[in-house]
Length: 114
Image (cartoon, rainbow, N blue to C red; front, side, top):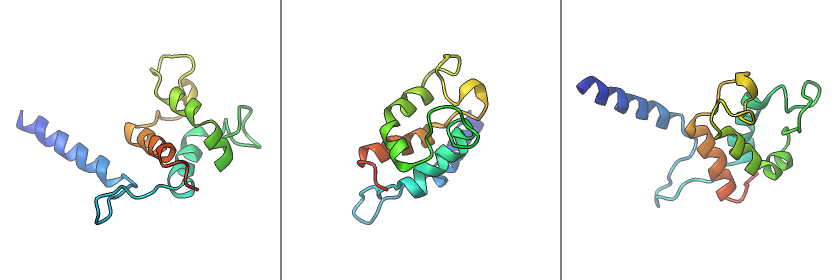
């Protein structure tokens, strides 16, 4: 049981150490940006299928494309892996973790800062 609790604490610490949002002195969450926070996720998990020159699907390579398709992106990355519309398609890339999905959600909640 102690090992299980230790594993949970270590896992939570690791997850939080990679979180790109921080609280400032007033306790408010810092603003995310497309360039620093969202684009790297999309570039890592949506290439090559959704990027020009290599992809044949709807392109997600720009701020505007990501913003216009954020609801679809969030819907599809949260489907069960076995669902035919789950993304990334057929496990070509590792599924997005909850923390990565939360970054995209927070970016939307913050009204899509560039």
